[in-house]
Image 1 (cartoon, rainbow, N blue to C red):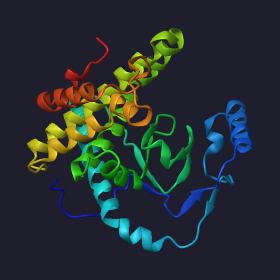
Image 2 (cartoon, one colour):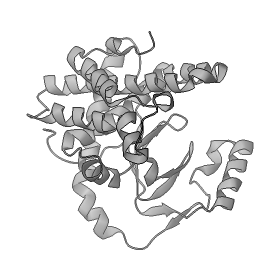
Image 3 (tube, rainbow, N blue to C red):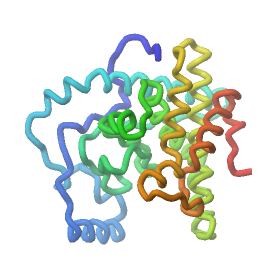
Image 4 (cartoon, rainbow, N blue to C red):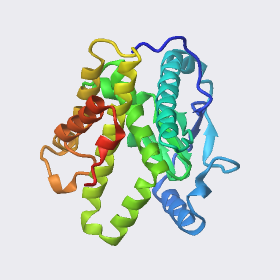
Length: 271
């Protein structure tokens, strides 16, 4: 990708200098009970003791700085793209924050750990990312390249775009009313986020931000994290009924639809 000078986004929240203290089974149950009573906000790190500082991380931070700047630039580019799209449609885009953490942190949606992978929390409107996931993406999932990483960020910010449109709330309500189709609705939500990532990629290509091979990297990443490939890797078999994100082919197809159209209206997975 061609992103120009580096720098840090004002919407980047760096928590790599503090880590969440280990939580045992008993502690997890206590957190669950507290969350049910007081709401997810009880886990925020403003005054709680669930976070503790761990030694000197300056060496790791210096090594990761190029990735931090890359994430910052991609974050700003994606959100600037959506802000323009919202404005043209007569709406207003409210930027999300992206939280960088190492090993574990807390979100308004509950504890966040590296093993969970990147995710978007609609309650605090933040994307949570451990940079170590990018190493996993390359080594474990065989999806290298800067645009593979950009695709991951664009997908998570696609969920923020859904949130601003009220799509995620409608899906949760439909899931509550009809639990039998909860997984199917989850898949549709994820595929729409893939399509939104493709819409941004179209804009980036139009603005000369992409290099030869970038789209292939994105498609490879989308395929690598399909439910069928993930299940086959972990269990040796595939159960379509338990899909929550979509198959590799579905994820590739919807990213491609967004990229080729450049129009979010082509991303209606709920028809």
